[in-house]
Image (cartoon, rainbow, N blue to C red):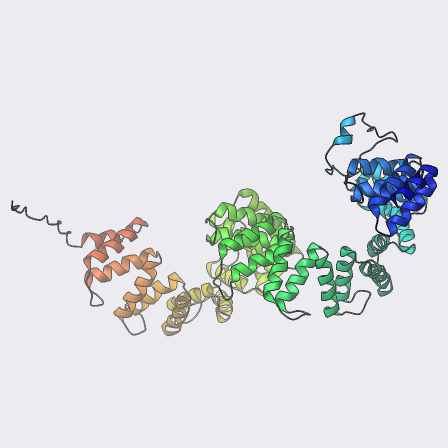
Length: 596
């Protein structure tokens, strides 16, 4: 057989090509390559193209990008359509080196011939030149590449209308890439069901050809019922196929479906594995979901350190939810160092991306003095814009900005106006507006109406409103005095961790109110407030321990709590501290004889 090949090659380059094609079809590429080379050196364009492909694919010869491109260019310069289309594709992937037919680089550097097969930057200029020649010669693949460059290439090369025409020609000719491009071009203007159905039909063609992006987009349309009948299980299987072909967003969707059991039997372990794969490939949504899995825990306790790693991946890729979550971890010190500046940075990123929760988080940091003046201005602007569009939550937040002077000069009158708007639907606004009425901030004082608004917020469980309403009931401001009801509200708020309510519980049980005196219970609540840093609670606990008001005297503990209260600036505690007996001097042991 080798002898026959040599005889054929020596007599006719065309015969050598025909023999090489037959050998290639039988899978005998290594035997075919010398025959192809003979025909290519004779200048037969098809042979030049096939030799170029052999070098590119490493078929019958060691792979060489440089040699592959050189032979493709020789074929392309003879107008061989497949070579033109292949060079266009290589160019936009940065894999084609511009050379003349002799093999010398256009830049005149022979070193390019021996360079490693490393991709450079995309060469759209060369790509559009090759693609246009291929497209005009009738290559469906070339038409698809030309459509892509005209759509997604550098701005100066873009022409969406021309791209649409080339994509259409490619799609009609049966090219899957053309069908995908044509579907995306149609989708730019598709609005009614008939137009959506046309988009879906071309996406189906791309999906049937196994294109990962076609599978993913057709899955989206199938899931949402756009242009096709909605079919969640079918969409999930399309996501699976695309995921297996490496589509990153499909890996995330398939993983989430397995995790939650949507459209497929639940398999949390496999679901998490797919989500991890997508996240490691750079999918921000998948990274955020994996972060949530670690933050929430499950059978195992939450792992905030691991959650922070995944949230950071998502945040750095621009995911606004992951950015906010990372900010919250830094705010609380869960899994990462507590750092209000770092928290503000990630809240800022999330807020600028449009996350309303992050904007509120950033505003809360501003109220604490932990964010910048620039943040204050941006935050106020976000809330003002949203409030003007009718967002009641934003109206509340904008009102707070005005009331506290966040990013704008303090204006109690305007603050009251915005808070009143928001109070019709936002519990926090009811509380704030009630306070402003009770205090006469920005409008005439009206304790009765203020108490009514505060009661509305308290009735749905807002702890701050419960405490303020209890205080008003205690003093009779804005209505009748009712110490029993006040005590019940204080107890409810104290049970949910409100330190001021804990102190109030101690004060009411300590006597002087219309409820039974119970100093043992009073001391318990003063202790609870003191342990949480409440200065008056610390002073009262010290006073109880000095005087034994609940039956217990403990001068050492009393001194400790009184000193803590004084350290917080509560000078009233100095008198109680002075009333303590002096501390006994520590006794030293008598020296003893040593037996020798």
